[in-house]
Amino acid sequence: MSTKKSITDLSVADLKGKKVLVRCDLNVPLDGKTITDDTRIRSSIPTIEYLTKAGAIVTVCSHLGRPKDGPEDKYSLGPCAIRLGELLGQEVKLAPDCIGDEVAKIVEEAKEGDVIMLENTRFYKEETKNEPGFVEKFAKPYDMYVNDAFGSAHRAHASTEGVTKFLKPSVSGFLLDKELKYLAGAIDHGEKPMAAIVGGSKVSSKITVLNALLDKCDKIIIGGGMVFTFLKAKGLSVGTSLVEDDFVETAKEVMAKADSLGKQILLPSDIVVADKFDAEANTQIVAADSIPDGWMGLDNGPDSTAEQKAFLSDCKTIIMNGPLGVFEFKAFEKGTMGIIDILADLTASGSITVIGGGDSVAACEKSGRAKEMSHISTGGGASLELMEGKILPGVAALDDK
Ligand SMILES: Nc1ncnc2c1ncn2[C@@H]1O[C@H](COP(=O)(O)OP(=O)(O)O)[C@@H](O)[C@H]1O
Ligand SMILES: O=C(OP(=O)(O)O)[C@H](O)COP(=O)(O)O
Image: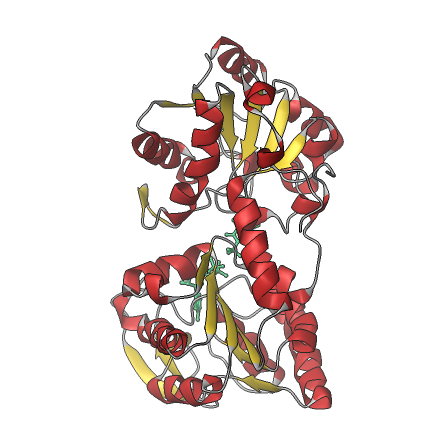
């Protein structure tokens, strides 16, 4: 049982009339301004609705994407405010900023039951740096804090960690509670053999988790953009594929550790390569050790899917984070859809399957098989770090019971 204080530990009287800052993870996949999967917004509703019904004045905050240098329209939370309003059936006013006098005025003038959304917290570099001066300004308009952003709980940022030092109480929301409860059970009491599937494009943040995952898992599948840093570590050519040169050594260490522990890591044996990063690119399927110069790997091929199926066939607990290809383009979706089919079939035969992460969940929804998984998690990196055995900083910072 969690030792951290939850929204369920507060009474309605504790919430009525209170200005509550709620950190959600509304980092949804977008195609321009169109939300392609709203799972993270829908998952945030129970906490927000509970607070509005209790008569709180609710201010929702989140990051979206990884803006590099201040505000950028493509990373505005505007589309999320509109979608949240539709789901709640009430207006959600988008503040023009996440700190400052205008935000304070909007919060001050709001009535009980109102919902406000702040603009992207990452429009300030101080957010990810968790800079105390920024945190103080950020926390100022509110009486208390609820963290419901499971997908960002592995980040020690101003809005996920620092803010708890200024707002009391600081408690978890329903989604955070639900995710922690499910995942802790699945991981701590998960039946073996246990496997992790790690793909996607956030190579640097996820490759470092692999070393620790080797201690927990019997088998690991590497997929997506992660593959090419490993192929390069094996001395192979990767053309123009996504590679993180700074992590080639880490990939070598991961493979050496797997060997010394006698654990298996499966890399794709065939790759779908393209002559450009484009839905209409020319493509060919090549052996993983024969990627031609000037071509980039954007999916795994059919032989790899067959090998993944055999590799996972005896696994009783499987957690996946990160698509195995650029599934957003039809030409490169087969690897991701293939692994989703394998996981759905394994669930039907009794395995526990967890798919986590914004884009992975979007892919799973697109496949139509999301309901067949044991658990769909709003957190990818967060699920992996939990599996690794870490205490997530966004959780550690909350009030003790
Ligand atoms: N081979 C690849 N090259 C470049 N990008 C890839 C490749 N495979 C998958 N991706 C991209 O990875 C992105 C998702 O990565 P990530 O954010 O790590 O996953 P999640 O959101 O599920 O945690 C997708 O947008 C997908 O297009
Ligand atoms: O999408 C997220 O993580 P995920 O891709 O691991 O699911 C979270 O919103 C965290 O985003 P970040 O990895 O830019 O800190």
